[in-house]
Image (tube, rainbow, N blue to C red; front, top):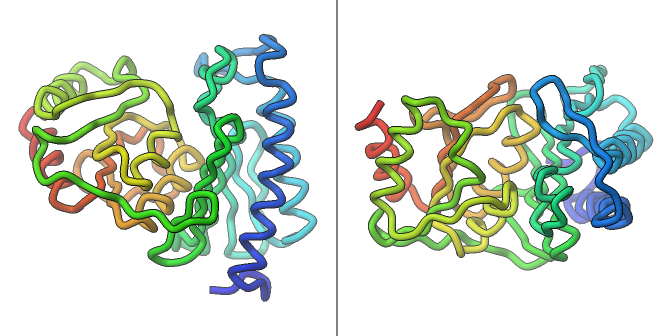
Length: 264
């Protein structure tokens, strides 16, 4: 699909240039300020979050004035086009303010109900995943493919934090965690890039809004993986506080789903 008559190469070039700019903003403030405020849900927000989202919004509006925009920090922009951009300016703000490098900027693009683009950009690590074509995800311009083990007992699983689960979901998660070989915590969106590149097998966690998960869906699916909620349902715009399960293969995804559903 072309977007406003742009070819795939032109669109990716637009995204790359934009991310180069947002990365500079993120790194300009990184480890130089601890000023932050808490939003209504007690999640932190910094000046970098707001500046990055403003930059992304203004750049998109200049290039695609009819497109809608949904972002974490500012009100939705609803325009006449079927195209809607989703923005999480700094995914992993807690990591960012703690001086950790595994934060990232997320951008997703929806056309009607079809997810056609996704980006994970981790500027402090110089790693960038982009997917704007079916069955293609690249890391720093090179195609990546999920690589999966066959069984849960051999799997490496990641979660940002299991402390946000309710008791029922916690029991289900614990059952899955006990079934895998190794679990690592933290890293937010970076985990999904690592899954797309073949280093992680499973991710199980809770994500709060479409700008948190829609970009990740495109990255994972473009690399041949699968990502749903804990009941196996597709993640769609509008869902909030979603329990997400991402896997490097359909087989491993089904085994993990079965384990989660045994305890719910």
